[in-house]
Amino acid sequence: MNEKPSGRGARIVENVIGLIEGGTFKTGERLPAIRGAAENFGVSKNTLADAYDRLVALGYIEARRGSGHYVRPIRLKPLAARPPHVAEALDLVSLLREQLEQHYAVRVGDGRPPPSWMEDSELGRHLNGSRPGGEVSHGYGHPRGFRPLRERIALTLAERSILATPDQILLTQGANHALDLIVRNLVAPGDAVLVDSPGYYPLFGKLKLAKAETIGVRRGIDGPDLEDLAAKAATSHAKVFFTQSLAHNPTGGSLTLAVAHRVLQIAQRHGLQIVEDDPFADVLPAASPRLAALDQLERVTYVGTFSKTLSASLRVGYIAAAQPLADALADLKILTIVSTSDYIERVIHNLIVSGQYRRHLQRLRARIEDSTVAALRHLERVGVRIFAPPSGGFYLWALLAPGTDEADLARRATQQSIFMAPGAVFTPDRIAGEPAIRINVAYASDQRFLEFLAGYLA
Image 1 (spheres, helix red, strand yellow):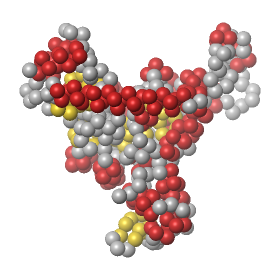
Image 2 (cartoon, one colour):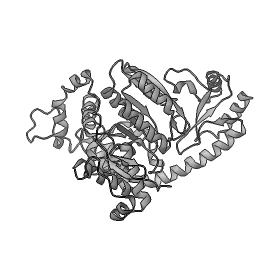
Image 3 (cartoon, rainbow, N blue to C red):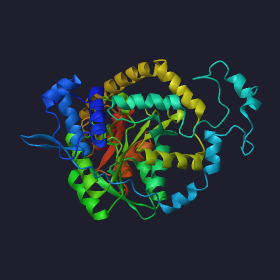
Image 4 (tube, one colour):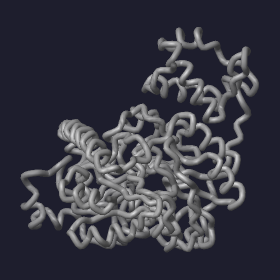
């Protein structure tokens, strides 16, 4: 069995890609055998074999049984063209972009006073004792976000075997803002878009605002249903597939490496771009199977956030994307909100570099694990079946007996001041399949909830 992907494996992948794209390895040429290549790179055979597997998944090489690995012709499909209405709107941001990036010394065209006018402001005096990450900034900040934080995120992504430069990372006001920017850029009115079903319901609302045709792809225990994904990609001619690979909301399950490979093959065959939302990444193993790690941001755009693991009120998330898409999304960010909060991004950066965030994550992982174990024990006692084995996030997908009216269950719960999330909310058409509810493990052991649920189901 192969070792888990490592930073060394990611560097091997990057090195070989550079040799192929630079012409050192020619199309059809046989790569060095695993044993010899492992010795040259100073890694184990398992690590080298894993790197070759990822190069196969990325489309750079092919494995020939009994013969070895060979360089394939590179035929990467370009990113989808920017919708005309987006391109027209972005023509208007050039003046604002200069006010953010500031290339010129004399700024008579600027729209705000110089920072020196704000040196003695009440804000400066109020924040004088903290100054996270340096002096208080009175400007908008960089349009892509506080660069030291983007650099730290790039290092974190490298630990997940996702290679991205700081300029490929765009800071956002949480994952919802990230998804909104992506929808605005990639989706035009009338476009077919594929989503997990059940899946992340706020995304469905964004796609409705964009006047897209939202098509649900069945979610299985180990990821998207591959037959359903392939069939709907073929018949709908969809441009984008939005999915959560790990600790999926709402089912709590995670995709396997085998499913991840097949998802990328289907996407390649049908010209799909993939948006991978990974909100629980910081409490999950770095080596967990991620589409972005296999694809290296060629056709996968990766979304992360600090909202689930630190504070929803801080509103800091990020997008990692291929450079052309990252540039386009940065322009959209300027057009829609100008910039994100430089000060809050400095707070996050300070928490990371000081080690406080790492210690917080250790405590959070322990709480999730303990709460999940207790939740499973209590729910089994009241006769609730769980759809997928929990994989480290907040959610369990509790399956109810056939014929259970989940909407009635939620209404009756509200009468006892119990908030429930019925399963139909998590489908794009809001039509329930097998009756279910989403349960947050942090609250699942509450005795009032357990007594209500046991009484209702009885």
